[in-house]
Image 1 (cartoon, rainbow, N blue to C red):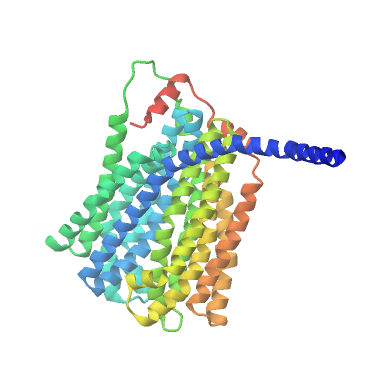
Image 2: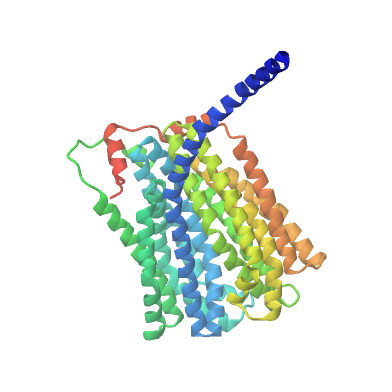
Length: 499
């Protein structure tokens, strides 16, 4: 009996010695995870609200087009698709090239790098907007040569010509957003966006209906809203900056400001642009292919509902992606690879959790959601069949988008661009075409093609993130953005140097 009791005590002692280190490790990790979740929420929640506000702003514009008439809605939809593909996606992607430089520079407190990157990015976007503007002005003759409907083409061309000034506004607005986002100041950014969006509805209705400007009024209202956002952001930056009497830090030499660093910024900007556009354009390709299916009006209507659904669902992973990009950049710039790794793990966990909720919501609420857009029986049936597939796509899309933020924060957007191009165009597109047209699954075949692309994408990008050498990335960040003086640290924490 004594022997058995001593054996039990010895077993308990062995188990205790094995469990206690694990228990102690959990006690050490959990507080860090909670702190990281709070930091990520403080950055990501305002970005999530901004995404919802932007979605509502776009819905307001489309609703006003619909009130103007069927022809205006068709022409406006064509114009919006064209401007998104050729303009806004390109400018947004190019602006994301400054994310790794600015986030890591803020982490290392190198204010010179932040300011220089902001100014250079604005210049790059302004140069890129020139050919885009020429393309927009010539939309009508281009579409007529492609044998598009003349009336719809005329309306779309009119909208594009009036939207050209918005390119200039976005060349300033997009970099300003990235600047504040990478500094971690997302709450002021949210309030600036919310305030300007509150003006969007009255401005749109006044221009389109009260002043009888029609579709031109809708285009002008978008310009006014974006310009208001830019002015509010610049106002915040100016008034939040308190001038100190401390001596200024060293000035950047002419060679450094004009010559060095352009190559790095160009590579990051082009890689980020390819990563953004390759995914964005695939949804437009999906709409294009829908027009060749049996009963194309049903497929196109369902495609429009699916795109609106994915746009709404994308607001959360987009916010996670931008917040983890900022967190990873800050920690790598500060020389804290362990914290960057922890932030990545927390973000992926949140992404998996949110994607599961997205799948459940879209699956069980698909009928009610479909009826928000249409009461057509055939369109509703196809929508209800497609949305569960889109929900499964979200299981892959949310972690994939979040990991893309990790790659941007660690200055590796080129990897994300290659993964997106291969997944969507070498995997997703062939499968979508075969299933939709050869196996005659129709629109559902296109959805399965999207699912195949998302699965290939998330598996590839998770593998890259899993194999990341965080010590090496921290060393790369030090080489990329360097350090800073004490005065720069103080001025950087105040949040301004651009103006």
